[in-house]
Amino acid sequence: MDNLDYLSKAAVDIAAITNGGKLLPKQVAKFEERLILQSKLLQLCNVIPMTTPEWELDRAGFLGQVLHPDTEMATPTESQIAAPTFDKRTLAVKRMKAVVKVGYHTMKSVIDRGQFIPFLTDELAKAVKRDMEKVIIQGDTALAQTSVENQLLGMMNGVIKQSTANLYDANGAPLSDPLIDEMEILLPDEYAEDPGMVVLTSRKASIRYRQSRGQRATPGGDAQLGKRDPMDHNEIPVLGIPLIPSNLGTNTNQTVALLCNPQNIYVGIQDDMEVRMEERVVQGIVYIVFRYAFDVVFKEPNAVVKAYEVQAAA
Image (cartoon, rainbow, N blue to C red; front, top):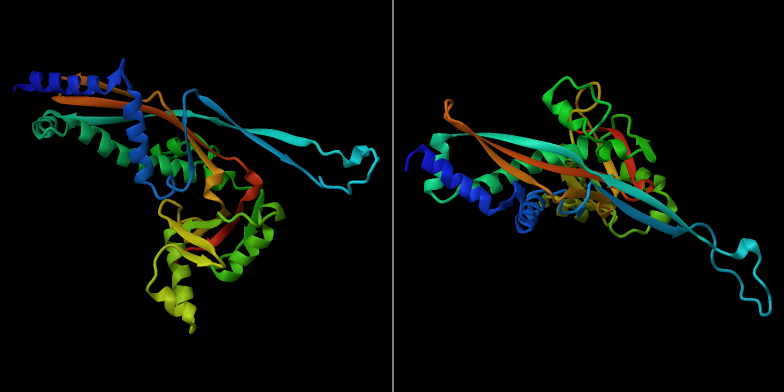
């Protein structure tokens, strides 16, 4: 086959998984599954496939006392009548794109092996997962748009930036059992019995925590010596997430720790993903353009405690 034949084959392969440039629903579901399976964080979160650019998360509950003595023949007073509270949190996706440059020689190689679509979808899913998870974690709309990375991170506020309700200043101390105790104390009482609570921190901080636990001359310390993630503190797992940064602070050796239920983190991915191919004959390359949109939000922002200025490295 000559170059035109390979280009035609690639166009046919892309047409088989798209409709008008948009990924077919089955392919969207497969792509999202790849994203989730390759991400330690996304496997823990609530991932919502969205059919529209916005998705409202209803929050309802009761504040204060709802039970009162059941006195016969008595009419309850206004103060004894409970009313639910209603609120909403909104996922509003931000559109992003990935542009992949593929040379004719590379395209020929993958097509000859019958691997063009797996090459396109699997490898792209790995790269998208990395960048998407970085935005979900580190996104900050206040960042100066001085670099390509900051332009991406500036699209939305990630979970670190959104965690503002309950803050603990670690003042340069490493992650430890007493520090996690202080985070638990800060957690509002209504969330204290949530069995899904975990501590999310950087990979380096979690290793330091494991080392401190393993140094104890106790049976528990011995157990930590041969153990990796997840460790736990009073049945609260401590998880190291690779894309939580360990280079924060003046000395670039600090991180954060989030005490939360990961199911409280909602990630919305809109289902109108686009894949298009554009040929550059003179240059001998093909551009493959992939567009998608997502957002992240805490459904219950008060159910999160953030410890900052946590030492991650010596």
